[in-house]
Length: 279
Length: 353
Image (cartoon, rainbow over all chains, first blue to last red; front, top):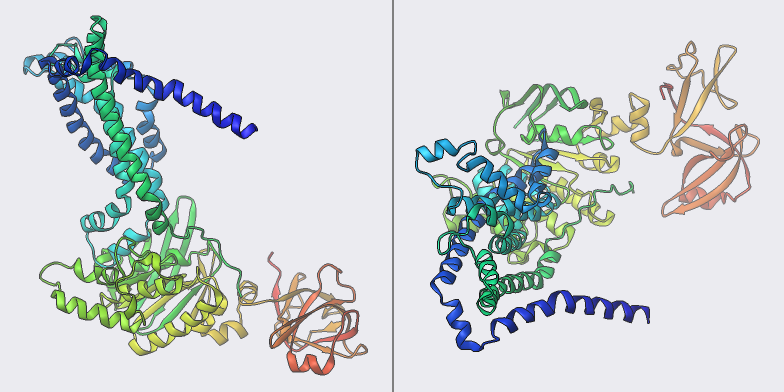
C-alpha cells in the first residue's frame, strides 16, 4: 500500500512538473495550426537565432571536450599540489549563478572593463557580440565533461596506461589507443549534457548578448523577446524547437545508457585489492 | 640482463617508501621481493621498470646507468595483479599491441606480427582464445594473456607485481609452477613481487625480504626459511610460537626448558624472545619435558595441528604444534590429554617490539 502511494506520488509529480509543461509547449506552439507554426519558425529572426545557437554550441562543446579530457586526465592519473583546488575550480560554474558569470565577462571585456580600452583600440568586439556569447557559454558548461570523466578515469586506475608505456607506446599512442577507448561512453555522455546546456543557456548569455535581433540572439533569448511582445504562438514555436533539441539529446543519452550495461559489465574488473590470507 | 640497485631511495611526501637499497640481480635469475604491504616491494619494482624515479641512487642495467631511461626504452615486460588487459581489444590485439606501436622502421610486417602472436599464444596455451575479449576469460587465462603480451616485445626483464594475487589458490599454484618452467625454458631475468612467502619460496631462486623500505635479508629460499637473520623474517616466513626467555641463575629458560646450550643466547640482555615453528615442537609422554594439555586438534590433509596449553602460559595463548598424519594416527592425541613438550629447534632474538 505504502509502495503504491509512493509510486503514484512520484508519477503525479513527474506529470505535473515535467510532462505537462512539455506538452503545453507543443500545444501552445501548434495552437494556431501547423501553417502558423511553420511561418513562425521560418521567420528570418528565428532562423538567425537557431543558427547562432548551433554555432555557439559548435564552438563551446569541442573546446570543453578538450578541456574536460585534459582536466580529468590530470586529476585522475597524476598526483600534484593543488589538485583539490583544481577540482573545486572545475565546480565553480555550478556554484556561481549564470547571471554573475555573464557580469564577470562584462567587467573584464566590456567598454569600461579591464581590457575594454585595448579591445576598442583593436576594434575587437567581445561583449554584445558572438565572442562574448561563446565565452559565457564555455564558462557555464565547462564542468560537464570533466565531471563526467573524473570518476570514470579514477576507477580505471593507471595500470592500462603504464602497461601501454612499458610496451613501448608513446604518450600519444597510449591516449588514442588505450585511454580514449576506455572512456568513450562517459565522454559521449558528458558531451551530450554539455551540448544540452550550451544550447539552452539563458542567464549568462542574456547578460553579455545585448539582445540584438538577428545578430546576438540565441534561441532562449529569442523566445523571451517574442514572449515579452505577447507573440505567444511564435514564442512557443521557437521554444518547441529548443525542446525538441533537448528531447533528442535525452534520447541519445537513453540509447547510450541502454547500450552501456553490457559494456559496463565487460569493463568491470575486480578493483578490490584485499589481500587473500596466505594458504 | 643483470640489474643492480645502488643506494636507491624514494620518498612519498614524508613517507620513505624505500631507503638506501643495494641489490644485485644476476642475468637469468628469478628473484622474489617478499614483504608485507607497505614494505616498499612494489615501489622497488616500479623503480626498476621506470614507472617511478628514485630520489637518490642508481639503477644499473648490464652495468649501464639506466636510472633516467624512459620506460619504453628499458625493454621490460610488466605484469600487474589486475592483469591490465586492454578490454576493448581481443586477446590477439592485446598481445600484438607492443609490436603495432613500434615506429614504422622497426615494426614487423603484419604477417610477422601474426606469426609471433600465434607463437606466444601457443606458448601460454591460449591459441583457441585469440578472438575472445578479456571479459570472456577466467582470471588465470587473463594473466596468461598479460604474460604473452609482455613477452611480445622480447623483454630483457620480466617484472611481475603480485601476478597471482587475485586468483584462487588452486589456479595460483598451477600458474606458479608454469611460470617457473617458462622461466627455465626462456632464461630472461625475472623479478616477482609477492606478499606470500610460500609463493616466493616455491618460485624464486633468490628471495629478498623487505620491511619498511629496507632489506631485511637476501638469500636462497631454504636459507631464508631455516636461518632467518631477524625476528621479522622468522615471523614473516611462516607460523611461529613466540615465548619469552627467562633468565635464572645465569641460565636461560623457556618455561621449564633450559635453552642455555644455544650459542646465540645473550644471557646478558634482559628481554629476549624465542621463536619456535610448529613443526619444531616435539610432543612426548606427560612425564617428559614441559607439561601441557591438548586443547584443540585439526586434521588438515597430510598434517595435523594441535593447540597446546603449556603450564604457566596464558590459557588464551596456546602453543601451536604440527605433526605428520602418520604420527597422529599412531598416537591418537585427544583433547584434554596431558603431554610433555620439548623443542627440536628454536631461535632467540632480542625483543624489539
